[in-house]
Length: 319
Image 1: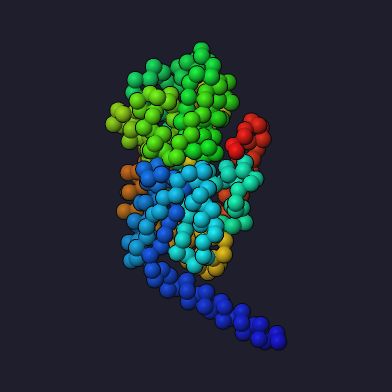
Image 2 (image 1 turned 90 degrees about the vertical axis):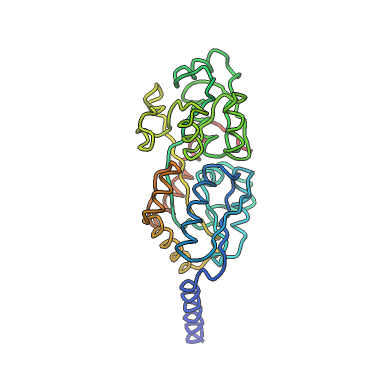
């Protein structure tokens, strides 16, 4: 009996290894929980394109915007663990795990972190005609008329939303949150001034600032962003403890085999080292986040704990 179990285990392992070696033999779907043109969509499409070239197989992005990225995450969690459905997610996944106990899936149980791709600050933008020229002036305007100014986000519970709530808390203001179904529709109201400001992802906000369609007031990292060194940090404009970073990376259904998960993670790491990938991501305005699968899993867990602490300290309700 024992020998039979050993034989079955050996055959199962052999099958998993063979499947991992042959992967991918058909198109791979990458679910993105945000609208086309959002920061996560932009980076996800760069990676899908480069992975497709590396694998010599079609890799396509499917946008399932809404519910702070949780529509796509739920679909990925319930997909077959054969490697042909992947999730490209960001901080919003950790925030949801920390703050939304009634999700139809459990991020840490049902999704497996595969490989990180980028970790970049947000950029605080306003429309070109907005009166405030810097963070101090924005705070002064908000304090002068409490509850009047509005800030946009790509959805309740997303990283850009939490950037705004953290800003409210640290600046002692009460700006009103206006959620959208993605970064692109949020921008459509910020640029003409219908909403006062937005903590945009760098791939969305930086091109707008460079083109003059929006004005950048600051970045959310402690140090200035290498891709835009002339833009001051929020920390150096009166809020020295302010810091927030947008990370993005690949996840798979937890039912995926360890062998296939390791294979995909190694391939993502290899693709990130290619000059063309690095060039395309630099053009998108993001900073690379290169690490292995084991460390990414630890990072994801630690990020969930960080957001739990913030939600608890601010008594923030995301549902």
